[in-house]
Image (cartoon, rainbow, N blue to C red; front, side):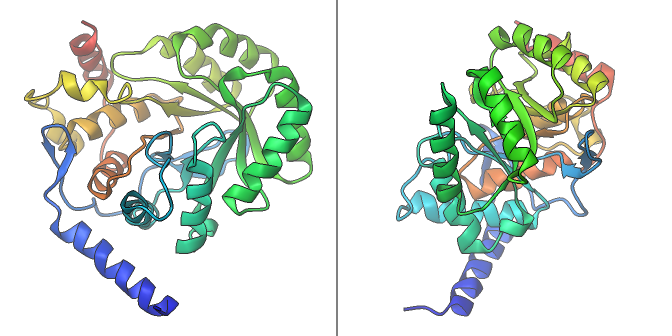
Length: 312
């Protein structure tokens, strides 16, 4: 019914309206402003030197939607804002419901594949299961290869890391890594970092969960391994803690105007961190999150103040 050019025009009008007109909530109790000018801060992937923007996109929960739903229509605007704002890395998994399928549809429909750094995962208990899952992931993502293939939550990691390396050797993924999301995984992550050559690890790190900074983050930095941070908002629980709480007096010095930005900027202020991956299905929140990748990072005293504030 509508030509591709007309559809792109309408998408542009809608996205421009979002950027110009929203005075919506960026997190509980926080207003956001227009996108920050200039490019996002980038960090190099140690194994290659390739630069990645420090703000990525997670998909767990937020992208598990029906393709014909209003939520999907919102995600079309979310990814447009993300890529036009300088983002690249989108992290997904076959364990995230319909997220792989939605990511593939969004990238194809918006012609974003060339801009995207797809990070997906193997979540399987055997080589045979991993092969079948990998084939299905490529089909759902609508791509012949991905940029990063990770072993999900260290699941059968010896078998699956070996398989991921085979896929890397065949040119089907550029990088390989492993992931976890709780403190329980930190000792094993440390052992793997000491004994295996990796391109990436993914782990949680936030103002109220800093155990990774004791061993895993400095070890990754020493070994030349890129770090993706998940759960920077502690699955949203941090917003409940800051309801009606003002930002620190020094927040403006770092360009921060919302708690969401501050939580993300805390994560990327650690020198070992390459990119943080907050998940959202809301255009106004995507705009707000991208702002964390602009302006000065937090100094040690500012980081320590936040850790003390949220330690209780």
